[in-house]
Picture 1 (spheres, rainbow, N blue to C red):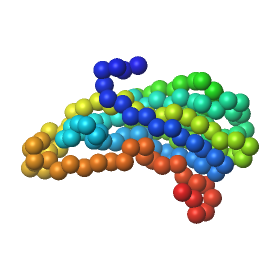
Picture 2: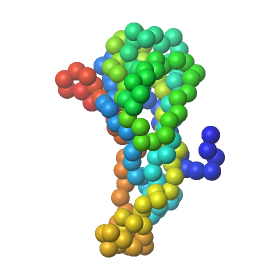
Picture 3: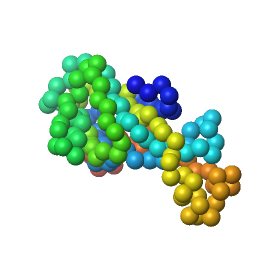
Picture 4: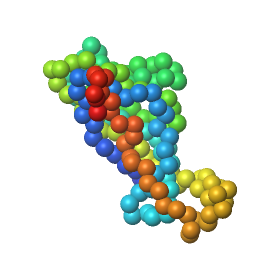
Length: 146
């Protein structure tokens, strides 16, 4: 993996009706403990934790760049460079939840100084902004979802 960089990981629980719309994981984030330093997502990781998950249960990772579909398989890991368009199909089972550990390895934002100069700000005077990690959020397929 990448012991020389920052990272952030989360646990996801998908139940019937949950899915994630197409997205590319691109984001600029600021981590606690490194104020003023912005990071970009460099490598995405998904580690599947659902034993006995079946293809008919849904919740597949779809790589929109290649059309490849990955059925969650217990104790397997998928990694890809960001940005890359992908989505998670609707979970169709009510018999169990699908768990995965997911996150990103981060690199210092190479465009921070250029963006700040274009806006007339220096790194010292730059306005701090945070982006909630883990976006996009799980979506509920039914009306009134999360």
